[in-house]
Amino acid sequence: MKRVLNLLRSMRFAIGILAVVAVASSIGSILEQNQPSSLYVSKYGEVWSTFYSLCGLDDIYHAWWFFALLGFMTLSTGLCVLQNTPGMLRDMRSYRENKSVASLKKLEYSVQLQDVSASEHLKTRLRRYLKTSGYAYRLSSTPDGAVTLAARRGAARRAGYLLVHSAMVLICIGGLIDGNVLLRLRLWTGAAKIETHELAPSDVPAVSRLHADAGSFRATMNVAEGKASNTALVPMGDGYLLQELPFSIELKRFRVEHYASGQPKDFASDIEIVDEKGRHPATLQVNKPYTFQGVTLYQSGFADGGSGVELEWTSPGQAPQRIVGNVGNSTPILLAGKPNTIEFTDLRLINVFAKDDGGPASGWHSHAKPGERVHDVGPSLAFRVRDQLGQADEWLLYQKPAAIDGANWFLVGRRLSQESAMKYWRLPADANASLASYRGLVDKLLSNESRVLAAQAVARRTADPNVASALEAAVKRLLDTFATSGYGGVAKLVPATIPQEERLRTAQLYAQLLQTAAESVDPTLPPSFVHNVLTSYSETLEAKLPDVFHLTNFHVLNASGIQVTHAPGANIVYLGAALLALGVIAMYFVPERRLWLRVFDGQLLIAFTANRPGPGLSGEFETIQDEIKSIALLSRE
Image 1 (cartoon, rainbow, N blue to C red):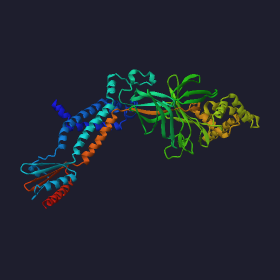
Image 2: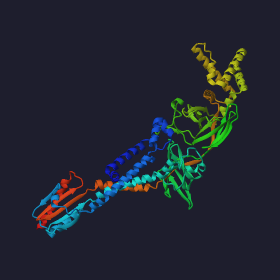
Image 3: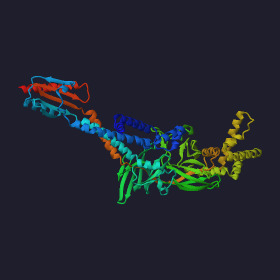
Image 4: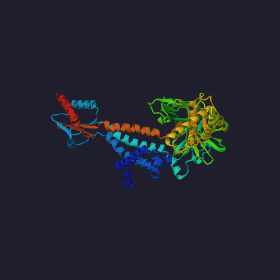
């Protein structure tokens, strides 16, 4: 047992534990902590992800071995303090006035003056000198008439040692308290269980709930405007625990300002904290937390609080269908007669893009970087369309048309899987900034009656009846092919047996006939708009995108992201940090000096020592020696 105690209170053991803690903390600063396992698998691979999990490196500061290190460090440093404090306090109070003449002469800095008498005048002058120089001293005398003035200065340096070691103990204790060791024990023993399903707060089971007095926590919550909540989520890797709060938070108003680049400039939340004593108004801002009943609230972000959105869905040849829902919820719909579900995921009011004079090849759908010429293209809505088998397509709609290539276009993005990139299509906007003209022309192109009338209108431009009949049949065939296959189908109508140059001329002729026929379908539309409609419709057919969604209206409901923390050990850590700073200052910036002045047998022995040798000590001793010589000479007169 004695050997164990000696090991625990040894300085080497404490330094070794401190080194391991420092290395572990460095790893925790480099490796993302407390993240879902999928993130580690995707970033480091399955083998390393499993290794990190088994070693607790994915949540170092709550790993059992890290708690053990803090415990050993607390015990070891505490035992060092208990062992060394009495001796250090004795040494701080001691003047060592009984040190022998022989031992004083052996000091590196000592000198002996001759013809000095132990007069009261000399004693008075020496005491005054020591006091002026900042020394505390003690006067003693012996029966043989020898007089000793033992002086010391800088005793606070020894207190620095005690402060530093006590600070380490306090910091470790605070770390153990805020690490919530009791919660970790409950998780390890199965008394508490991490919830992995997205449930309403009222549906979270008791085994996954933490009471308001369960100890320290760091949780997050989203509160929508006009709503209140008294629970927060504590992230736990692939799941969470539901933390109950001793009060509820109601969001009265959320404010956000943006830079020209679209990035948030500042955001704040006007809240009311409601407890049994009443309502307490407060404002949360970035870097300006608010503490209530020991719980600190931070403005950490913002999100959508369930904004109401309205879509219009159309499929060629069908009447538009109105779809209403809320962000964060889902709405069942019928698409092409089949049941589907729309899951509304995100509504963004500001979307800033780089200004672009070119087309899609110049990156019209890439987000701008700071310093670039930018412009806001307006609100966007992200959602998923999920079928009965659970397969989902991701969609991204922009409400307002964007000016690209000298025309106005509605931008539509679609992604078929998480692994693929978002692909974008452009749908032409008419003079009223709507898709009505696009849909109208597409519906007419899909109508056989409209295609017949268009082919006849083109044929009437030819005087020869035989040519007109052949032209009408050719145009009708072009329109029929384009309606079902787009430009790709029209290109296949060009005979492959003719020379390349003839094929190019034939293809250009077909495109001109198709453009002319489409203009005849709706003569009120500008030719450039008709061309854009044909191009967009062909691209949607090629992408198998017959259905068109359009964001028609929305009602914004903001939610404030609030980080909620309760750290009962924080004040202990802060106290330890303050003591650590004071201790380091005392140890390294407060010099410790001891000076002995001994008068005996007509001689004055001056002995001087310091805690650390240094190049300036010789000069300091010479100054002391010269000043005391002057005092001794004056005392003779």
